[in-house]
Length: 444
Image (cartoon, rainbow, N blue to C red; front, side, top):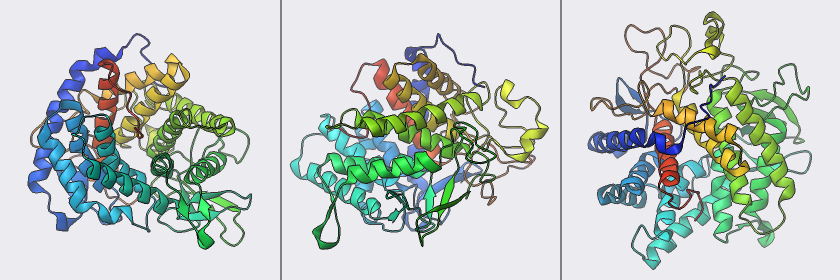
């Protein structure tokens, strides 16, 4: 389990944060110099160079959101212009993309960050620029909410790109699209001009995910370990009943793919923060979200190596040959199973947010401990020859998409857009805490 440093303070990480932003600037400029729009969104690195992988363009928002976060942290206007111009030129199709569940990833990271900066006074006031961002965010939340499947118990969920039968754990983090659109005064209009609340759909999706994707040790099946998550739940579309767990990127439906776990951790922590600011009585929603957030964060703390970086799946078969792998720091250069630092970058922010929300040091100090690991070697990439910022990330182990360097039996040493973005977002979050700047949220 993670060896939580109870004495660590956010300010103790300042040197690591400074090193990150210095390295980040060079990485953004390197990718800008080589990226070709016709090649599609960059996804992960191969031998240190970013490449595309045609599945869905779910990483485009991370690509353009990165320079926006860089500007936020450093004030360097050139990065704002990169992010703002690429958002204007390339992101419109993502707003109306009816085929994916990734709206919060793509559009929250671009239009959302830009609107936040404008409302914080970091961008010069411009009425029409603000309206442009607002309209984009209103639309993206409604489009994502329209990907709706009803369940037998009268609830429903946003279905994944696999189709109406499929609920992904990933979508918990993209629910910010619905919450933000709702906060901006928008609704989804249905047949006969029926007004569909985006807040209600966000809460319903979060509840179905909590009921079926997150486990609590209640005996749901033989692998019901408290806090573990499934990647996917399959529903019978004839009657809306749950049929079984599944997995696209994890080892199996009955093990925990750690990036999916991290998406759930952060998704619930953020929505708890959001509901605390939302008018009305949301006690019931806050209760089930808190249960899911606690369970998943507790599982992460207990089933991750001492330094806070997990292996890519808690049931990956090679782990059985690694002895007491949870009793020592993760080894990205081992011969059996890859680690996934991108999971750690997402999970660290979740632990920090939940710890602050509950005023519970166990979670907050756990997040700081994970962050300290990621802000140093062998995870923070400072080499100018590598375009990635966060090393030792994994994309799709079952499909064999990750690069295996010569002389190594497993993938290691590479980066991905979501890992790099979430390390930057984690750094920005911590920097604002240290400098007592406005608290970082997806809504303004």
